[in-house]
Amino acid sequence: MKILLVEDSRSVAVVMAARLASFGYDVVLAENGQIALEKFQESAPDLVLMDIEMPVMDGFEATNRIRKIEAATAAWTPIIFLTASHTHENLITAIEAGGDDFLAKNWPESILQAKMKAMTRINTLRQRLAENLEQLTETNRNLADTQNQLLQSQTMASVGQLAAGVAHEINTPVGFVNSNFGSLQRQVDDLLRVIGAYEAADADLAAHPERLAAIMAAKKAADLDFLREDIVTLMSESRAGLARVAKIVSNLKDFSQVDSADWQFVKLEAGLDSTLEVVASEIKSKAEVKKEYAGLPDVECMAAQINQVFAKLLVNAAQAIEGRGAITLRTGFDEREAWVEIEDTGKGIPPENMKRIFDPFFSTLPVGQGTGMGLSLAYSIARGHHGRIEVKSVVGQGSIFRLTLPRRRPEQ
Ligand SMILES: Nc1ncnc2c1ncn2[C@@H]1O[C@H](COP(=O)(O)OP(=O)(O)OP(=O)(O)O)[C@@H](O)[C@H]1O
Ligand SMILES: [Mg+2]
Image (cartoon, rainbow, N blue to C red):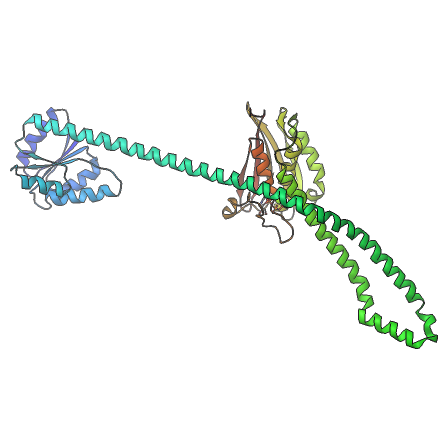
């Protein structure tokens, strides 16, 4: 235990220091308040014995300053005032100045030792309290994390239900509008053919100039030439729009069917290969695909869903690449888990987007191109498998998405 002894009288200080040393304490000496402050910071004592009346800076002022230094760090060092006269008034002043106790200079050793014991005890308690506080803070942080995750999965669950409902409701009208559109397209083509046939007869109407004039006027009013071209564009744009709606609905359905399917032991690398085939058209023009397979053991999962995750991650990787780049497929495993990594040399994800990429409907693709459902679907599939998706990304360099799955389906 280290004691800072602050005492202006050299002779008193030497005697006291010798006595303290004889009890086994390390003693640091300071002859006034100013020096005491320096030594306090230098030597970090466990206890301060502080004289009151001193030149340069008195004990009360020094104590005050020590308390200020400590306030910044939440530390606390017991300070006992030393005084010649043992009055109540002195005691009160000492404590109000930020001291903890008060000791007459002619103290009997037993009293000093008892007081030291008390101070040590208080200090131990303080330290324990600080440790507990740290633990509590840590626990609190963990709780906040868990709460976030819960909130996230709750959101996912309710979005899943919502998605199922919406998909179900939209599916039927989209179905009949789509099939009506097919008929409409044929019928419009027929109508245009009939009009064409009539037009061929225009020349024969010379004998009926008033009828011809009426037909010409009607054609002009309808802007028939423009209409012929525009109708084709309108139809094809509308069908494309409808196809998009159908795709969203099918995404929503996939999304909501996250916990229905068969669990099987499958070869993830083979699944990755076949998924790559399915999305090849979106990848080929963007990236060279490299494979670094570790030879995964069979993993118990719902293969169709996992392939969906691969598809979403592969397409995202291709979409992130501006110009031409590379996509690396990497796998690995340990006793418990297997993982599949899809790395791209794309534009990366800015930190401010990182938190949101798994949110449903979050997309940075140009308007009309992304539904923003890809990663939220992937996320909920991973969760449904008691797995996880981790992301590393550097803006301007690329991203790595890693899907980790338990090799066996955990017991329910
Ligand atoms: N590999 C990646 N590199 C860079 N950004 C990515 C990558 N993968 C996802 N992102 C970012 O996350 C966003 C959300 O991805 P998500 O797959 O959920 O939706 P999307 O790709 O925008 O649309 P959708 O998949 O429905 O067509 C993307 O818009 C993009 O900003
Ligand atoms: Mg996507």
